[in-house]
Length: 266
Image (cartoon, rainbow, N blue to C red; front, side, top):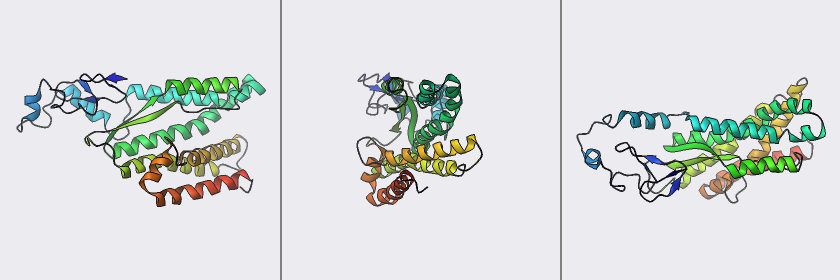
């Protein structure tokens, strides 16, 4: 967390002033609002676009490029991925053997881990495409809770919320529009549906591929259905607030598929 240099409010994704290099919250991001020491330069109409300090200019351009990851974000994504793999392999360790755990761990990384990471990165890329700053950050409490639940219940109950993508608009002082927020939120569940269909194609294959297909299909289908529930901080709430028609059109078929899968038709 970084503190705003004016009001000292903590923010996960601070705005970096291209003229003085300071870190500020959304309210104090403009040079006029934080009394920038280089305010004269910022206001100058003759100032060319590339005349800002090179290091900060390069940093901002790289930070907002499509698909770009900073070093901190990469580390956070890898930790979240590994923790999910450990949590969803824990029952194999307790009820079978260390060898079984070592076999199930890469399967969990490929099915559960890929579903979670793909879901979060979909939010990130769509948000970036819509002109926002978006980066994944670990949620330490969620990380510890996931490990504790998995260990105490021997893998029977897993609270999987190790982190999330934090999003801030770059220019709009009023925040993200309801429509854009709907697009960003919908991207995660849609990605899980696509992954579920890919894993479905592996069902019926030989050996371990069949296992990967069945687990990957079930996990990603459930992730999509659960996150589309219109409650609390879930993606479904934001999609529902944006367009109830879109929410019904996407959510209803997914939940029907979940129920059909549960009763064993597919």
